[in-house]
Amino acid sequence: MLIYSRFLAFGLIGLWCLQAQQPDISPERIRAHVKFLSSDQLEGRGPGGRGGQLATEYIATQFMLAGLKPGGDNGTYFQQVPLTGIQTDKSAQLSASQGGQTIDFKWSNDFVGVNERLTADDRFEGEAIFVGHGIEAREFQWNDFKDVDVRGKVLVLFTNEPASNDPKFFGGRALTYYGRWSYKYEEATRKGARGVIIIHTTRTAGYGWEVVRNSWSGEQPYVKVAPGQHALSLAGWVTQESGEKLLSLAGHHVDELLKAADSRDFRPIPLGVLIRCNLPTKVREIATRNVAGLVEGSDPKLKSEVVIYSAHWDHLGIGTPVNGDAIYNGAVDNATGCGILMELAGAWAAQPKKPRRSALFLAVTAEEGGLRGSEYYAAHPKIAPGKTALAINYDALFPFGRTRDVVVNGAERTTAWPMVEAVAKRMGLTIKPHPRPEQGTYYRSDHFAFAHVGIPAFSVELGEDFIGKPKGFGAKAFDDYNEQHYHRPSDEFQETWDFSGLADMARFGFLIGSEVANQDRIPTWRARDEFLAAREKSGIK
Image (cartoon, rainbow, N blue to C red; front, side, top):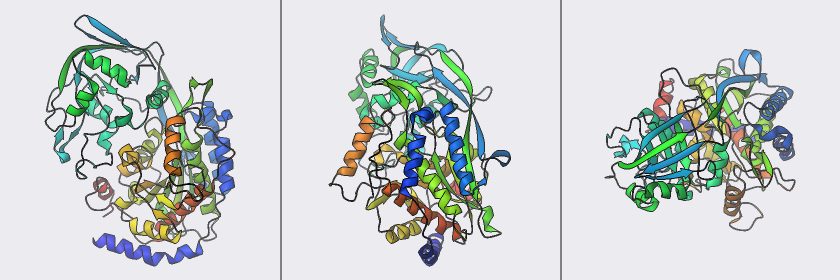
């Protein structure tokens, strides 16, 4: 409570400096960046491809023109991120057999997946066992595995978490990391499973099968597996219809097992089904990189500490054609965040008197493949986590005009919260909770990688109360984007877009970062937060 009170005091006293800061933030410059980055010439900005190379050169050039110092390797603007690219061939095969009956599943239509062992070919068979949501969470007294040995087995499960109306059970309506598909694969790997098949439902995933198919059909970036380290031979998904067929071989059904998985008494169910899989895989080394630019602070001592601004530059590249279009431009996701990042970098560098702490502007790679670029930076930081005051991330903002509200999902978990509230009030913005906490967005973007090493981190997002738009416009806009454009080639730049709201979000983040950069103490996590231990390990109390 003492830390919280001190931070509140510093936040309120420090607001005097906000009156003097009028950052030159231009919606039209943001527009120009977004238009270029999402053009067909950049081929969807896939890591390791020509489009990704062009995107990083462009961002680095903008940093240089703005006067930022190189923040990457060996005096450059680039931090090299060594990854291995794996792409499953369309001839991949998956089948389920029981009692003389075999069901074959078709690639893309019925299933997708990768071989996380990063080998060119992996044929295997294994017994299927249903493990509910695949969660072991001691703090919630929940264990889907009940100490059953699943080594060598193929785990069949659902993503998301057990349903409950109790706000103290997992995250209540808000999805925790236990509900994310990435956790499912990680936990299965720790337990020595041979493979994982996630049965997709729109309700449990939060998006339709087309999103899964488009996201997993192309090349996936991975960190190279260490010698002797266990990895999954199949990290896969099947459609709800295919899951129904698989479970029916064992006399079960999707709805029945979804309900069973919500019970604390659930025990793993051996299905008596043999899974056979063949995943011919193209493997290559990916040369990709983060882009980093630094503006040094004015205080001789505190300039060794930084505020990070981040956005991921990558998207899905060239993939499965939809209506004849194979370029996944990623205009909203995330050319918008990169446009804001470059505009913020220029505004910060243009200040006649810089804030006391430095600012690092970081455009990261391979977010779409599992936060690989931000995870790499967090593991190989240019400035140690204990000297990083705050990380503010921008990811997929809707350019539909200004809003009366703002979402800062996760900021309330940090001691920076009173200051965030004060900045919002000064700008006339109402802070709203995330409208879809069940989507687990805190664990889906790059701020999570920074939080994982203890850095207080959150994303700045537009709210849904758009000025001059009819009631319900924002919610409908999200639904339309999620259903028609998210991770699809149709996420393309539109000349009619209004970037004034993105400029507001840039100003909002600028003021938050400036305030933190000028304070005597840097933020930490609130008491009992899941990331507090990592923050304290870095030397911040």
